Amino acid sequence: MDDTEKDWIGTFIRHLEYERRLSALTCKHYRRDLDALVAFCSTNDINRWADIDSEHIRAFAATSYRRGLSARSIQRQLSATRTFFRYLLREKHVKTNPVVSVSAPKSGKRLPANLDADRMARLLDIPGNAPIVNRDRAILELLYSSGLRLAELTDLDCGDVDVQDATVRVTGKGNKDRIVPVGKHALQALAKWHTSRGQLAAADEKALFVSNRGTRLSRRSVQARVSHWARRQGIDVNVFPHLFRHSFATHLLESSHDLRGVQELLGHANISTTQVYTHLDFQHLAQIYDKTHPRARAKSKDKA
Image 1 (cartoon, rainbow, N blue to C red):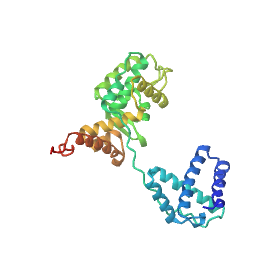
Image 2 (image 1 turned 180 degrees about the vertical axis):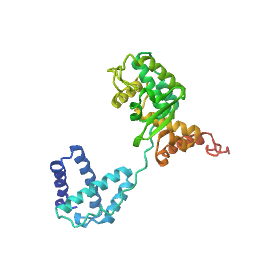
Image 3 (image 1 turned 120 degrees about the vertical axis):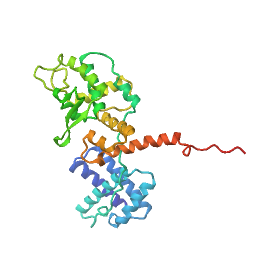
Image 4 (image 1 turned 90 degrees about the horizontal axis):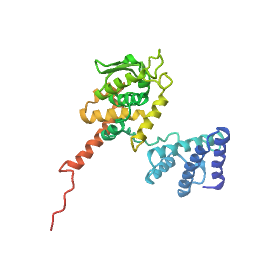
């Protein structure tokens, strides 16, 4: 690649910095991805940006793949290249954008994280009897027992929990209501919290969970309390409120294999959203198969 052509990258980066006001880190990523394109061009005797066509771009992506780059990284490279050629078009240095007709590889769907049953039990075993502790224990138990979203939890009012029916009425996405069962441990924790709630809640506050100021507990506060107890209980992974929902769904599928039932409990409008948990469940079953099935275990070689 000619030096005069390489200079266009520096001009482009300055355009990103001063005209588009992108961060220094973002500009650094653009330069890194374009340097990879320059290396590809040099290897393939391509000397001008105007000489690059869509087949070159596909070969560039394939080369990156063979080098071990993930689909997500290749997507980023192609995005940077597409933006660069858009700039070159604007400056009339090229006549076409060769990246427009090239599709980026699809990245694999990320499986949601979850806690196994043992670590979840350790996390929920919170010691103490102070009002804040009783509140936090009820929050964690309810998140895991009923698979609630964070917003669904913080929006709960006292009347939304039916102790007699062991259910909770929640308002999910799209203002759709659903009724979800509440487990025994969560009911016990909620009963204990009700005995303490009056020490914190303002007289006219309807919220089920309140802060030490007596008003409805915020989502950010719930996130902070979940992180606090994860550290206190010695949980060695990042724990956040939605992790309880993932764990709820995964553990239910492991035991029931009722995808439709889990879909209803989670309040998913489309079952394809719920199906991601079947991949987690399959991983669990595959591990059991590999460890226990006679045809899966490697046979020891016969002695001569």
